[in-house]
Image (cartoon, rainbow, N blue to C red; front, side, top):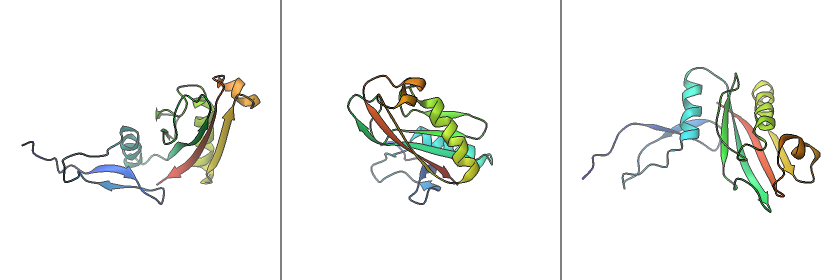
Length: 133
C-alpha cells in the first residue's frame, strides 16, 4: 500500500481565498497545478487574480471551468482560450488586482475585440476574473 502524503495542498475556496486541502481517504487529491502556483505566488506576497471560463457557445477552445492564474508582474499559468484571448485576460487580471473589482469578459466571433485578440474559432467564451487573497 502506498503511504499517503500529509503534505497540505492549496485550493481556491468559495470566498475567493486560497485555503488548505488535504488528500482524500482514497489517497487521491484534487490538486490543481494552476491553483497551486497561485498559492505559491500568494505565499511570496504577490497579488493574484484568477480567470475562469464560466460559459462557452459553439466552437470554443476551452470548456467551462478552465482557468488561468495571473500574478502581479504578468506571470501566468493555465489557459482560458488556448492562447486566443490570453493577453486581453491578463490585462483584465492586472486591472482586477489593482481595483479589487471582478470583471466578466465575453469574447466571440461577432465581438470586434475577439478578432483583434485572435478568437476566430467561431465560438464564444465568457470569463470571470477575480482577485484572490
